[in-house]
Amino acid sequence: MATVASLRDHGVPARDIAVVVRDLDNYEEPLYRASVHYGLTPVFWVQLRVTQTRPFALIESVCDVLGMDTPSREVLCRPLEHRWAPLSATSSEWPIDPKTVQKSMQALPDESRTLSEWHDELEANPRIDERFVTYAEWLRDCPEPTPDAVTSILADVVDVYEELGLPVTKENDSPSLIETERDARAVVRVKTLVQQLRHKYADRLADGTLERSWRSVAELSQLIATQRPGRREHSNARAIDILEANDIWLLNVPYVFAVGLVDGEWPQQTESVVPPELQETILRGNGPVGTLAPRTAWTTGRDRDQFDDTLRAAGTGLIVTRHTESPSGEERRPSPLLDHLDTDTVPSDERRQLMSAARELPDAVRAMLNHEVTNSE
Image (cartoon, rainbow, N blue to C red):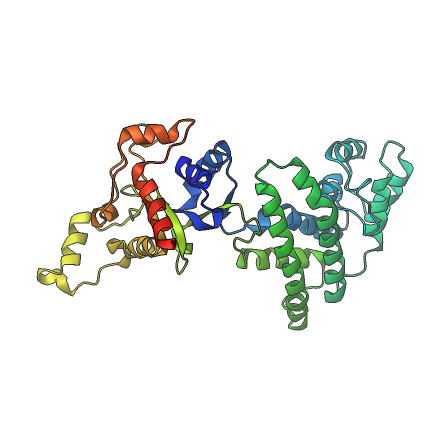
């Protein structure tokens, strides 16, 4: 990321830079830390796990409390923990802060109760924040879960969260606004989910495969969310795109950084009960085994195709990096994919200069910049 920061220092816009890795699972955290260290804003092209976001947890918790005959105090208060607020809410009063939610919840009895009984308890208990009564009245007045009612209620819940809950995420976020971006994406996805829910819920009720209940609404929401995970969306033009090799196809980016070019990672090693020696024999097709069909995974074809797409995406310059040791100190060999590239290796002294406070670009990278300027002229 030091090279990325130095390119930005030399006037290369963020939209002209992309960092590509084979699999983001092991790289998202270190690349995030490195980006923040160098003053960069990273945006990760990863599938949004909607079911693990606060907006989804909010509508799911609302369905849970409405779907129980006698919810516990924990179930009752969960929507408030996820920043539920009424349509008439103002930012000065809502959402209820977590400490107040916890304090009021601890003042409630342990026994589960009906929503009407909870309303009466909240109204009579002087230790309970009065906003809890507003919430209980809303729960009590919610209609039966028809498709239209479900859509209307959950859509209002998400709209109010977007207006009042999302700013709380931004206020508590880091300067890179990673959590805010994720929360905003989740709001968009959950809004779409609620609209899909109307039709799917109505269809399931009509064909008799689902009973009309808030519990069924929660289960169907979970099913829709896991089937449609979402993709990267953001409007921050100053952010550095960090994406998996699977997503680089057909993109055209002036400067591409291919990270993690080590053997066993890119291409990945595939587990097989067939010994490597026999795999090689089958792939060569010599002798009787020539009639056997090799598994596609043995040829690392997918990894090679993605690496080829990475090379094609680089319009002006390609920088490939790898680590020489694992976190435990084991030696890591370079990826065999590098054998087919004519690369310029950055000397160790230039790497040290790049990592210094001056962040001086290596000569090979500077040559790419000079080449771009010459061509533009």
